Length: 207
Image (cartoon, rainbow, N blue to C red; front, side, top):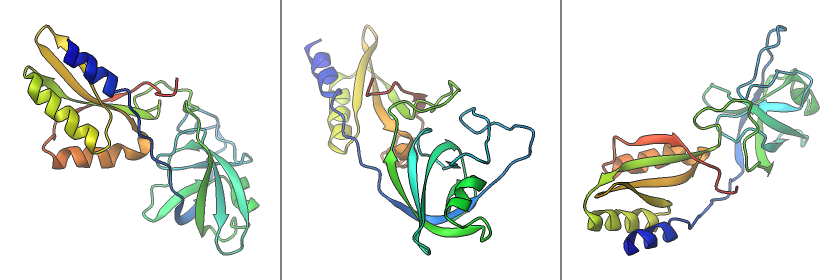
């Protein structure tokens, strides 16, 4: 029990990486006039300064810098996309007009994150909508094995957590993996031999 208490104390340590600026191609998109919903459950509004991004938290405010003309526009992420290689953000028509790219269609841009909410602004309650994931690695009976794995994952920047699954079994998980690090984290685990893990939505560590 003392060892478990130490595990739980250490697992409260959090190391959050800063989100770097992102460079690539911006495009704009529209939708039919029947009131479709964005990926976070809101009504699509072509007149709103909003955008779609592949993985930024819903509600994130991004400043989009057009690298050719020097114009910029602040948009709110409420949708997912674009799903074209090389493109990093899809703007609404209003946002595209704000940086004079509506007629051009696509343009190289740089994204600067101004604000990222602690709780994603979504109308859905689906896995991943919290913006954070927990990866369950397995359940073990050998305390020494759990300790070795705990120390290993903590040393490479993960946030390991343990809990008693049954009287003699200990469940080891990695907690508070942000959406933007999900795929890279799974690749690291695969390289370490953890090919079959259980991915779950996690609570928000800031609450």
